[in-house]
Image 1 (tube, helix red, strand yellow):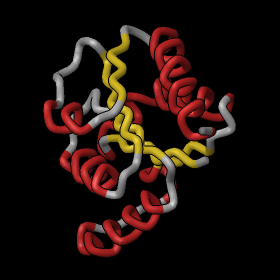
Image 2: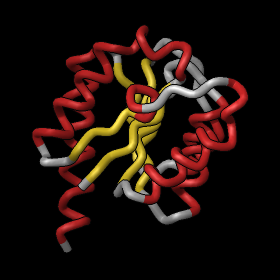
Image 3: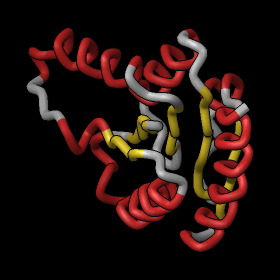
Length: 136
């Protein structure tokens, strides 16, 4: 399995610890984590190419994790596309950040966490549900 992790590009470094916890938890479940912004770099003029690559990577993923502690239009677009393709969507954000009604509204699972340890614990529970569903 593969998980596409969507995160605000310009705020990516501020959620480094959270992304590390997400990746570690995914690996524990034998799910390959894929953070799009860590694999590709585009200039502003390459917007079409960027979205083509994002679409290809989402198509090749089993689920999408939307880390929305820092909102981003791209997160919503990626989550919406993934939902349209029937992918499982996991919405997550720190409890002290703004709620994203659009991404939350299309998500299958919701994780509102207080710290990295809380994130890992809640994500572990969600992944148990997801992986048991995929095995059936």
